Length: 128
Image (cartoon, rainbow, N blue to C red):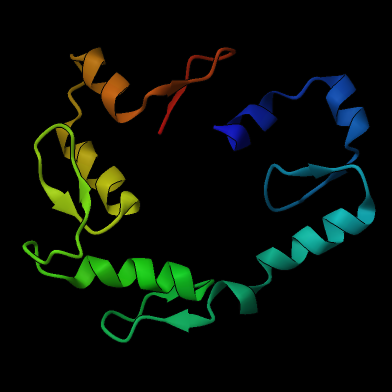
């Protein structure tokens, strides 16, 4: 949600943070901060840790570890995130977000409120 809010910066806010990342929406007050941030987008950082099971690559050991739970069986006790709609247990919050899309019904706006509880005051877009 915070990243989305940055897309609505007014001209005064932009003047306070004149250094904009060319890759994402982040803006900075100092060029040194932008330079440090830009390094987070470097390719060698993005694909350093690889899953031995499926080959998917991750930027940090924590992200890889979280991903590894997706390979667990459904009844494994290490799956600790539960869908509030159907009760299914999933490996992590990212898996839950993907899973919850199966419950979306365009004719039922209340479901969207459960899955995406945060709403942008400026444009009405909803987020998790």
